[in-house]
Amino acid sequence: MRLKIITIDGPAGAGKTTVSKLLSKKLGCVYVDTGALYRGVAFEIQRQDIDWKNDTALEKFLKGLDLNFVMEKDSFILMSSGRNITDFIRTPEISMLASSSSARPQVRAALLDIQRNIAKTKDAIFEGRDMGTVVFPDAAVKFFLFADLNIRAKRRFDEMPDETKDINRVKKEIEIRDHNDSQRESAPLTPAKDAFKINASFLTIEQVVDKMLKLIEKA
View: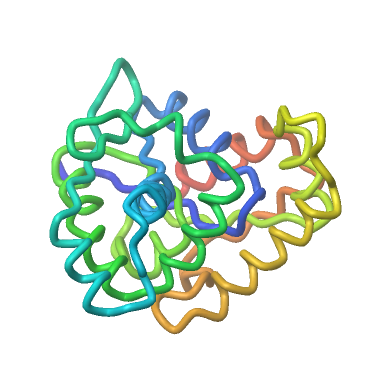
């Protein structure tokens, strides 16, 4: 039986991760957070103090990179050279560095095989920025999830535990990421031509997932 791949692309804060996790449970398939891979690259760039804007330095770094997902219970954890780095890749600093460094075509090419190898063995939902346009152009069903900037900023703000957090700073960072992701030359953030576009601004997570399930059934 042909494996079923579903892609969910969209900007930061649109709810892709939460939606993808719930949808994967409903469908009984694997959820893959591809953004974690780019955060993993950013984490190692920061940890190793790599000049990622220098082609020679970046290519040497990527050749020595050992990133992969390991299944633990019902989800993947991100490993780097045998070390679990899952808990270290969600800081605002790493997020911004991931957005910038992921624009480099060398980075995207290095991670392509990891993503496609997972798809060879499992039904899966892949969440990211270019899953439906570049990584899995032949996916069974593609979604593009988006929401109003102010709503996305508020969601991110509410998720942050830091008491010194600033809603204006969160909004500005998302604006920068939106610009970086949509304007980069390599695999810019844009809906696939055959993607179902869902505006999640005023929908609950359950409502978004229900809508996706109905569209999947019809596909």
